[in-house]
Length: 375
Image 1: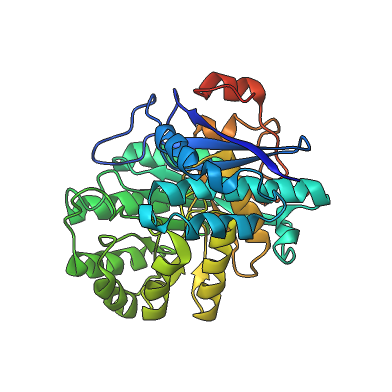
Image 2: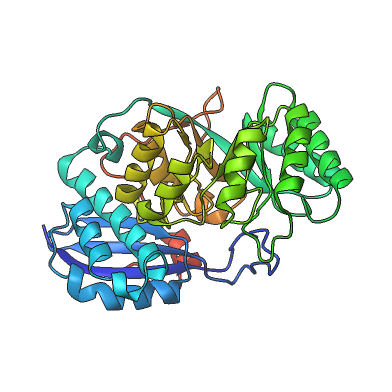
């Protein structure tokens, strides 16, 4: 089975806010689907957290490398693309685009073999996994109202991030967290994401240490991105001294970038994003490295329904990966698949059992939000 064509479909018109200091608009393109068609009519779908124009440019550069390649060998094909494009930059738009190709090739391999991707990754440790609703922070009262609405839909784990947190005052930070904990109750998992990869993040180690003490008082499950994404030494110190688990890694790409952070002990929880790091093949290797260092692997998932499906299969293949991220209120998660996601009575998502990624696109929804036809 050979690769015939690879195309990009950018999703626009309902792009969710990202919490960035230069905020995303609904018409901005940052989520892109990758469509891989084969000579035998099997189609795979991937997802990339990158502007569609950049993905299309990357595909044009790599087309001679993937044309007529074996569509049933995702790991080898993806590694070929990495190895033969290093002079154009490792970890940027090319790596992001390879992520989408790799996810789509795993989807094809699963369809061709009649197996869900998680089983092809070595076996399924679970059939269900808990999603945590991920939402941007707000002032305490509206945030608490939003959390209560999400909890009423069945979610039992929540991550609040970015917004005014760490950007106004320590008092406001604590009022936000107190309101969130009171809204979700004492038994729910609550995580806090400072968004230290925001432009010109101003807070350093002392702020992070003081804030970590405050978060521990509210039984916060982890403190995410409390420092700027290059502050390796400070992350190591923070992890050693903080009384809450420290997480991060969403801005890193490829296993080579993760290795020094994992070896140094910078994280309690590492959070690679499958739509950025190089796809399922690369994220699996990062997860394995984390296991060897006794670091939890919890995928970052601020992307699309296809990214969520890939995360669910990765979660099924790792014994300690008991959570996946679920963007609250994004049409690119909730609307573009034919069978909407549903929580069970325990607040869990069923990991797809159908071949490949196990999800089908809603063609009308993709036509509504896509900047190009699926074909």
